[in-house]
Image (cartoon, rainbow, N blue to C red; front, side, top):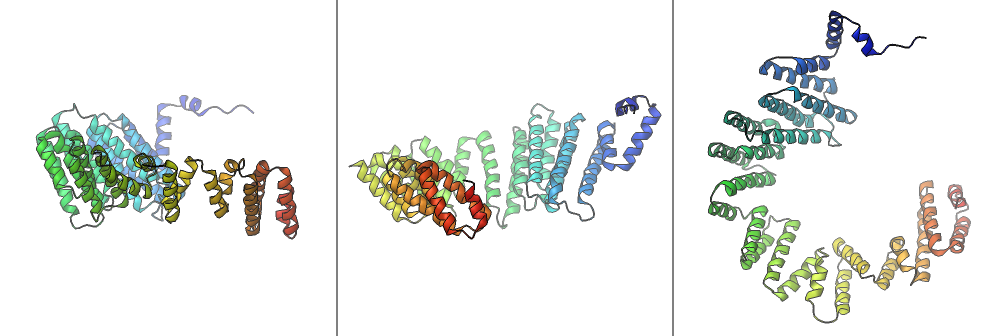
Length: 455
């Protein structure tokens, strides 16, 4: 049978009219293909070009949502990829204002898609983030553009930030307003942006769960004031917003840089007491206070706070506290160890394990695994040289206990893997003795016996 000709070869032999007919027929059967051709090769004016682009977006949405009106999990990735490919197709467009409109259309549809697509893997979220990145890059490229273009970009982005599609998605309008700062070098535009931020803050008034959004918006305000206004205005803004952690932290930083350590301590203590502070924020304020104590050489205050930070989970403060403590270092270590063992929290438990590991305290490790046999495999190698008999006793008993709780082939396999590791440590003879004991004890579990026979 003759070799089939390649498609390209067949098409080259067709007349222009025949090619037009084929393309027209294919476009008539595929709306996405049709509109993609019009978008890529059409010479339409801006309004018609954007209309074609918007129609293509809607076609993609319709293609994926179907009759159910919802995009299932397995289709979401392809949907997001198609919208992204559409966004990339704008590279043939030379007018940056048109590129901006296209990006904003995809952004709007991407955010709307959170309502009609299963975005369990975050594909739509990634699409939205990528569109915002492209808008940011497009805005950055306008630094030397005509003033009319820069004004258009600013106004359009501000308008978009107020789009109702962002209800419940506060991060996105904040990002759009932050992008606008590239146009704030001129006073009139800067005032326009600050006014827009003020409007958004006023709109957030009385709403729940807008603390982060408000703080981010006020952060943009501060950046503009700090960059374009006298230093006194920036300092005043910080003082007026000390109830927000980012500004309090900034005030502490500036106090430290200025050598006003007492002011830094006062600001940190107020932050620790603030009822709205989260544990992580309180820890940050304590750490700042510690650095101020350190700068002032307040040893006793350092000791108290270093111990508090250590017991809160800050392992790095053990070395600080050890250096501040007088007397025998071994006694100090034992006293801290006793406090960690007495405390019954996850963080102090983790500190205890890290400390005995770093100190290579084998006796304490052995005591720990004897009380917590499930940790034996983690510590066996380190302990076996000094405590071989004790390790083998705990290890073997742990294997017996694990075997007693096993009830299916996967768990039997896990027991056998444990036995392999035990054998490398204790030797074949000890391993064989346990295997024999298990075979006798569980003679009525054929799946377990099968797994044991493979050792």
